[in-house]
Length: 245
Image 1 (cartoon, helix red, strand yellow):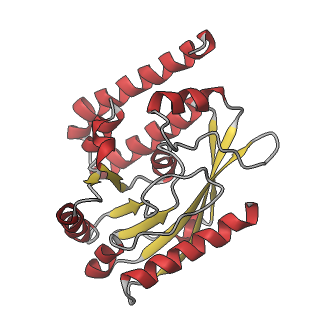
Image 2: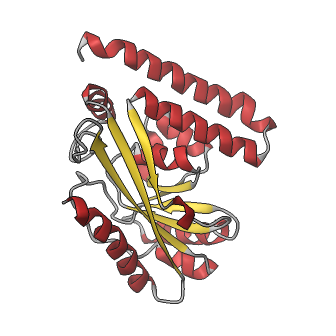
């Protein structure tokens, strides 16, 4: 990596250490509300270290209490973008658990890890989600993988079953990244192919100033089968993304 990246990488390292310190020594003595506020602030500061601003559109659509939040997936930093607005529990692929530091943080924050190729793991995760959705907000990325942000892949419907079991409302959010100076969409945050986490971090640090846009969409109620709900959520997000294709 170029020498110019050393200083911002050090700042990110210090921020990660602060996060670990908060999780180990501060969280045990915080109320749930205080924990949420600390997560939100830590994630927002992380975005600033990557020179990423945050724009929220129609945030009032989002309810309170237990609900399922459905998002398109572009990057590992999507989680921190969402948490910088409002902290959620997340469902992530099992590989994330092994990531250095970020994987440990994800575990401490209650992330549910899923092995999609194992049917039993999927069923167990759906049941855990259904229990949590009684009181907690959970975010999922039903594409099953990340994209370059210029397209949306078909949504896998399995985890929508949790919202049906819990009778929890379903909200959708379109995630997009734009260059601040031109307003054009940028693929800089995309975490795709064989890219490693460090490569992705370096790419983000080299990129011009970016803003992440979260556009929240009207609620879906769990009065349909999981396939119908998945297709409806995908359609809502795709209609927003198509405005910039």
